[in-house]
Length: 136
Image (tube, rainbow, N blue to C red; front, top):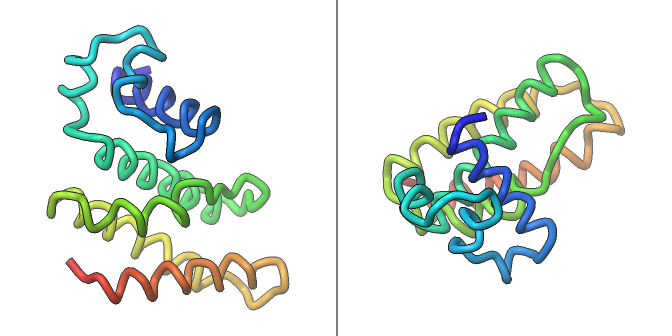
């Protein structure tokens, strides 16, 4: 596992344990036994960590849809964090997040019109509306 992956896992665990409001970037390196300097070499700030969590989750969900493992679908960071952190990111990070989200949204919209996918489609339709209101 790379240093970046260790930091992201620690951040994810901290958010699950204490919630997003109590999430503190200085706790991340401590949780995985690394220095603060190491953390800042990989992520400039808290928003960059949150954006990376969103991107990781979206990439996971792209694989889930492509492999039709719908029971493994995750929505923890994609739906909640993307709208919160997007406007606070630097342009390159916004572009990366927007690109992977657009790819994911295409896959979601291509899912069959079945009851099991209605909630998923409507949820991401809402996130896409927010996305279009705040273009890069």
